[in-house]
Length: 81
Image 1: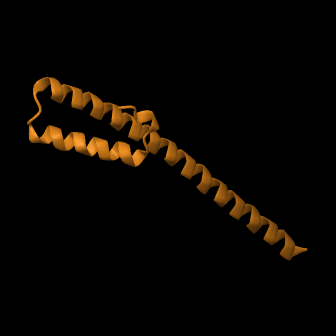
Image 2: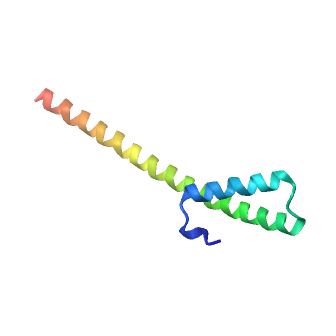
């Protein structure tokens, strides 16, 4: 399974499927270990993507507030002139 091309949602769905399979206790040991490894990989990839999205949102929000503050300063100067 090549996860590099998958979307976050597909990875999350695959991770949920793996957890469901492991929770049944049905997979044999070898299969269970392989599923666990896949799950760990998917969880890491999802976490990395979430952290990246969080950083991007933080930058956008910070820039939004900076623009807002700059606008308030400009408005304040205009009203004093």
